[in-house]
Amino acid sequence: MKAFSLLTIVPTALAISLIFTEANLAQTPQIEINRNLQPDPLVLKGKSGGSVKSKCGNITTAPNQIIQVTESLPYLRLTLESQGQPTLLIDGPGGKFCVQADNYSGSKPELSGYWQAGKYSLYVGELSGQEYNYILSISQQKK
Image 1 (tube, helix red, strand yellow):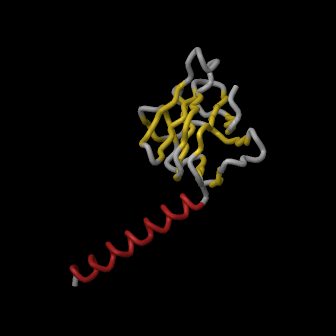
Image 2 (cartoon, rainbow, N blue to C red; image 1 turned 60 degrees about the vertical axis):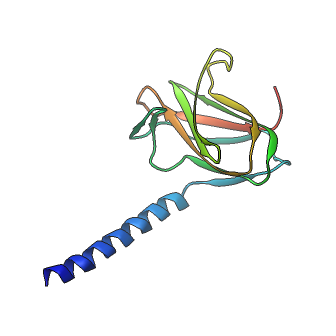
């Protein structure tokens, strides 16, 4: 009898876990980006940081934003503005990249260049452990 109840409980718990995981991902905003980005720059706002410690600062369990690049783009630039020490973790077709501020970017995490088609999960992290409002600009215009 105990084996029967365990066989019933485990699949039920797994199903509930998958439902909550899918619900969490379903709440993440997704934007399609193609060669005709409008408006340019596209400006997204949110809150940086989270409870998950990573090599790219504290992040949330779900991405802050998902972008779907519908066709390969010769140039795309992401620029993050926030107080504190913001980071940008990008998980996409080419792998995971952690972008931090440097002197060249004016203390703003920025990544630009060629982007292949695919889905990119963006996590806005924070090295200080705090949470701050952020502005993420996506543009096809070179500086």
